[in-house]
Length: 105
Image (tube, rainbow, N blue to C red; front, side, top):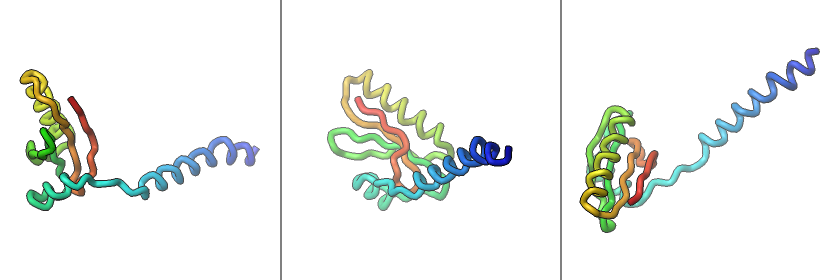
């Protein structure tokens, strides 16, 4: 009884915990232009940024307290660019520069 409890309940949770810790330790690359933008305009702690890349040039859309606000800004800029017929990439990133969401046209 105890062996089946350990096998069916405890072991899956222990393996899931180990997998999450392994994923968290993996390196997350920061694009060079995002690192340059953050060096130029650093974000405060626990803030998120939104940016657009048009014709290879990165342009900031601002810094936001919440990821949802940064994502909304990127999607609004994407909608405006789509209406204008422009091509580009729109994305959000955290204060370390890791890209969290990206939308391409």
